Image (cartoon, rainbow, N blue to C red; front, side, top):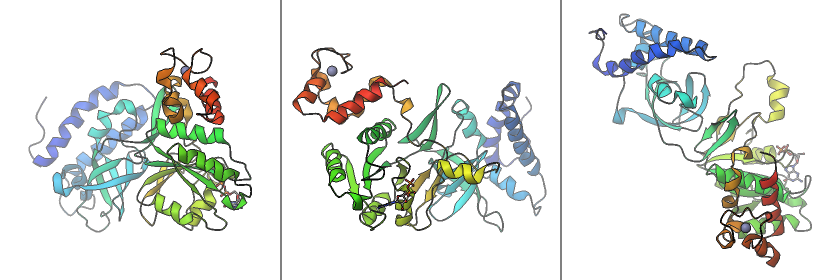
Length: 375
Ligand code: GDP
Ligand code: ZN
C-alpha cells in the first residue's frame, strides 16, 4: 500500500491511517446499515477532499476538524445531550457544541452500535472559533460509563442513556393511589442499572390518612432517600430541586402521578416528551425518538425518553432479583438450599423472616411477582 500523501499535516495523519484500513472490510458488509456506512464514507471522503483546498476557502473549517487533533489541554470536557446519526450535541456547561464522532471511536465499538451515547462524558476538540464554525467540534474520547438506562433490543441490551445518577420514582398519595409493587419494580430496575433510587411521593396534600407518609417511612427504613412533594402547594419542591441539582436524573412513575407538574414546579417550562405527547405531536415528523438530556438552569440534567419505558425490568435476570431487595438479601445466606429461590423451598430464611414480620409482606409479594412474571 502506498504511503499517505506527503502534504498531509503530521497531526492529521494519525487519524487518517486507521480510517483507511477500516474501510475495505466495511464495504463488504451487506446488512441494513450499509447505506449509512456509505454515507459515512462519503462524509469522510468529502472531508478528505477538502484538505487540499486553498486557504480561505469556505469549506476549510472541515479540514480543521479532521486534522487538528489536539491532545491534553486543548480538549474540552462535556456531556452528550443528544445523538443524531453521526453527530452528537455536547454540552460543556456553557455551550451546546455540535460534534462529529471520530470514526475511530465508531469503529472501535461497532458491535455495540452506539459508540457514543446520550449521557456520555466526552473530551472533544473544536474548530478554531472563526465566525460560523465556533460551535462545531469532534469527540475524541469517551469516559467509562457508570449507571445506565438500558433496554432490550432483540437479544442485545442497548444503552439508552449513560451516567444516570439517580431515578426519581414518583408515586402519588392519591389519584392514583400509591402502588407499592410498582415502586419496588422501579427500585429494582434502577438498582440493576447501578442507578440510585429516590422515592418521591407526590400529591402529599391529598394524604389525609397518612397512608402515603407511612409508605415513605417504609422505604426510608430500607435506606432509600424519600421525599413527599406537592406540585399543588409547593411542599417539598425546593428539596426536589436540590436533589436534582448537578446530577443526571431519570424521572419514572405511572402516568397521572404528577411528574410533569413537579418538573414544571422545579423549573417553569420544563417538559418531557412523554409517550402520549410523541404520538400526538410528532407523528410523521422527523423528530428524534431517542433519549435526550434536558439541562436544568440550576445545573444537572433530566433524562427525556420519549416513547421508551424509562426503567425496563425485562433485563434483570431472575437470579439477580434477590440482590436488589435489600431487606430480603440479608436473610438469603441462611436459607437451607444455596440455590433457594424463596418461592417454594422448605427451610427458607426469607419466608421465615416474612412470617416473623422482619420483612414486610408487600415487599415479599413484590419479589414473588417479579420472580414469577413471564420474562
Ligand atoms: P404525569 O402524567 O405524571 O406527568 O402527571 P401530571 O403532571 O400530568 O398530573 C396529573 C394530574 O395530577 C393533573 O391534573 C395535576 O394537576 C394533578 N397534580 C399534579 N401534582 C399534584 C399535587 O401535588 N397535588 C394535587 N392535588 N394534584 C396534583
Ligand atoms: Zn430462601
